[in-house]
Length: 122
Image 1: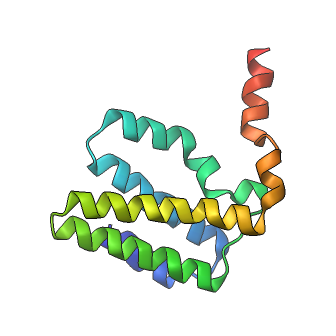
Image 2: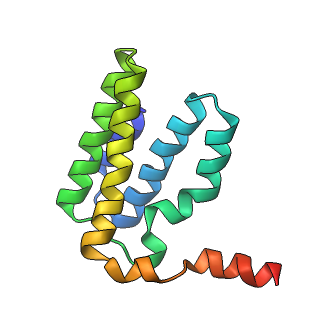
């Protein structure tokens, strides 16, 4: 987790930042030792970052994400699972807040991935 955070601090490119953000969350899902969480994250990770919908992260947003990741890591290192879970819940909720504030129109549109899934099923 620490190495992922360090890489996130160094990248300037939006795409690299998003990829590394996904790596951080993959690590969290994996170390949680929950097959359900890991499977869920694998399925939702592309939707969760939002880049396929044009969501971008300003320098301030990226800094905030890195700081949130550091808070989660600190709680993990302190062996405070309830605090880590609360920090992660707040962090994930911030993406929802960002979308509701800056990308409201996306909430009314089905995701491209969901459209592809529905087309495949039909």
